Image 1 (cartoon, rainbow, N blue to C red):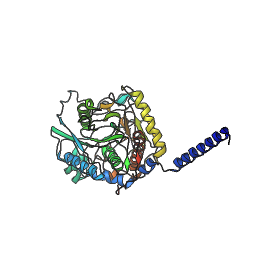
Image 2: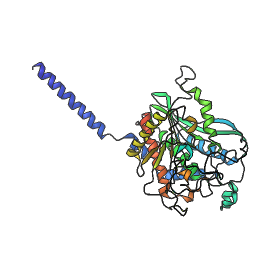
Image 3: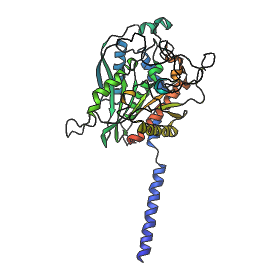
Image 4: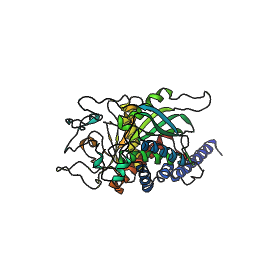
Length: 409
């Protein structure tokens, strides 16, 4: 047989083998779709409900400390057993003489600027965005009693656990929410919804049959409501440890290099803008969406914007009900201390400055932020955010499924 014929035959065989492999890959189930399928509305709701047993989880109280212990126990039960804690001290700062507090315009009776927090432009009918500090506005006597212990300055703790990458354990993404709340409520949405989301992702990624090339840290910050104190403490304590092997030659990295930080804060309520008479729609709006924000003025703005688009594309592929939209005015949440250190994003129910700061969530820091306020459509918005983050983080870390049994997780 002529050499040219043999070469053509070899090429034909090679192309057919390639086509067979490509067809097999196309027919193979998407491991991330399988993982996203392990999330569920009822499990998400149950985790939020579990958090509400500790009331508002106000920092510096016994109920807050009990919640931290409960979160750690839950993480361990999921298989994320390498839990650790950040310890820091919080002292209440003296308030300025003019009464100004955290959060800027729109709180404490201050004049409201056309610009909301983070540089966002506020439009339309403007509702209020204040903090309730009156216990008697909470009609539930048992909840009022549960939340009655005041905060005391001193030591604070917050818990995290880590999915260790098999190929690049020295690099990681941080996936986070904050577990404390205020307002004489149950903090079901702010931020039980974000905390439960992170815990659910920790559960899915900790399944024995899930492997990732890069590491993922699941962090539940404390003291967000005192000015992002817990996230700042983590960033201050850990930023200089990034990527350092310890002990040398061990292959262990106590603080892998940060590749991105993704915060989740208030995930469920998108009923639209206040009506002209100040009332709100009782239903989730049909065009509700998951808001993904970065900060235009941050050091890593360009990289964060590109990262946000990766999450938006993951939403299109994996989220079942609600789309994701991107904004450039991330503010007032725990991603802020990280935004000049690493590309950082904030996931929310609404844009923080333009919408929540304009009164789009009447339950924000109010006695009505309780589990029974929210409908399945509200909870489902949080679930869609979980689907979005799981899909994107799975892609970014090279998540795959092995043949190991899932052990019921």
